[in-house]
Length: 471
Image (cartoon, rainbow, N blue to C red):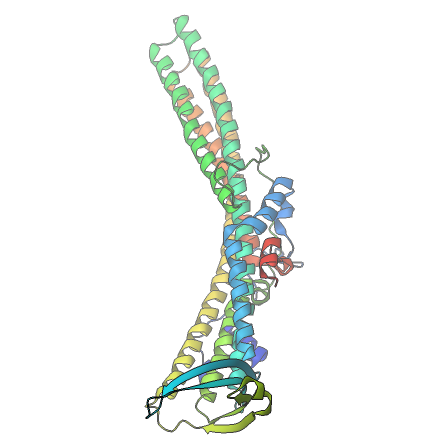
């Protein structure tokens, strides 16, 4: 189906298109009816709930919930939402009559021709009201635009919440992976030490050369040298997680989890067109296009005559005691019609139309990008699982090869080099397998983020923000 047709239907169906020419597509693109993945992988409904709970990790659940409350990007986003809400209130107030009042008192001294000073007092209480008759819907269009901008700001906040949840989950499992790497490395160091004892024993018995001992000692040291690097990466991941939660680096205490979760088959991906409803970033792009459409309407209406009604009333007197008896009032109306402005208003209409084309083009691009993110995550996870399966087979063969090389070395049928090279290969594959498992978890997180959801609709402003915004 055409993305443009869908985008136009969503845009014009919500608030109406102001101008046919303004909503012409800057380009056309097509989405397939389904995602190109294995048959049956899209069956069932898309999980739109808090997806991180599917990992069965209470620590992760607590971290995500804390981040949604305390992440500083989220704090800023709530503040931006409050600003847009107040701007919408300001714009809406223009459609109502504007009433003001003022009180004044003055005393004036003047010198006459005869040189004698004279004093005069003036007291006044005045009220004024003005109202613009919105004949062509200009003010209403601007009010709609401001309201839709506030809606878009809320969608931006929800999109950020999805990103923050994914970042926290991915960083947390990065911490878990580095801890698992430390455990694996410690086991490999122990294995290397055992092989070193074997070579030293054979050297003491005169069955091998010192070269074998030196080679294995080098292997032990090379393995130990990896530990500081892993610890450094672990600390960096923990510090990044702390910042995501809005706390200083090093101040975060977490559970000592050291095993990555097992992931089931890929969740249902649904239809590409459903992303427009599940993804808040796409809803934001749609809303901003709709807002710009209303600004086109306002710019067009600004080229027509406007009518303004004004009224004033008040009390004026030279003496405060006589103020109540001196009532004055006036009522007026005015009709303003642009006759010659050098093409300023026409240029503004064209500028707003161009801005609308830009917004719609952004919506189309964001839609294609969202589709690509889902497609990439599905395909990448499928191939990553294939790699992990082949990696496991490779590890099994490498371990059998190591056992055979060790047996032949102990029997004196070969030198130590085949043992050393096979041992190195086994340990490399073990580390690669752990990294591959971590990558599958990361891809699953990316897929959940790309699929979107409706759980963000339940987000509410932090208590402190609600207190600050209350009168």
